Image 1 (tube, rainbow, N blue to C red):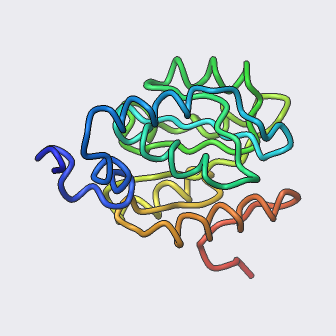
Image 2: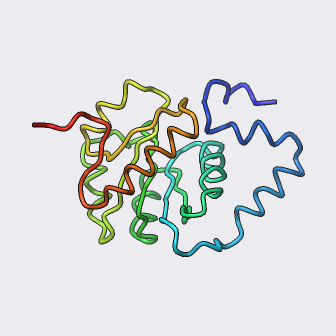
Image 3: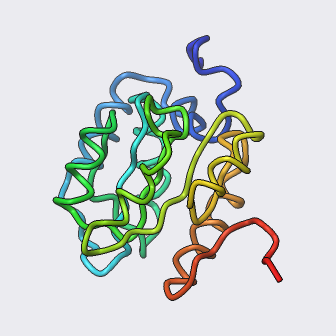
Length: 171
């Protein structure tokens, strides 16, 4: 049973719904906390103020052999510190994270030596234009399915040499 506060949150809580017993949840968390066996995967940092969303997204991404979740952040300060410390290839940024929509955050994230790509996540599809306008490389509505999420990830990571967005290209 999904707790009422997560109803309507889309695919990010799909994994939580499948974990019906406390024992399976504990075992799943222990598996996720083991050191990654895939050291050559694309390094990912997840920034979301909701622990359940981070947990579900991490669980989903860890199933992909070429993706390696290296850390999580629950607020802007933690995000900036972890981005500098872990040098991720890709950052998932919850647009509803307090302070995320502020001008300059995505630019600040790119000041790191590794210059990570940034995919914005939101429960509001109308946030796409603002996120892409602020410099995000991609946008995913949290209600989209796993296939759409992987499509955006693959597109953004494939285009390492130029900015990839879901906006039409300018002439």
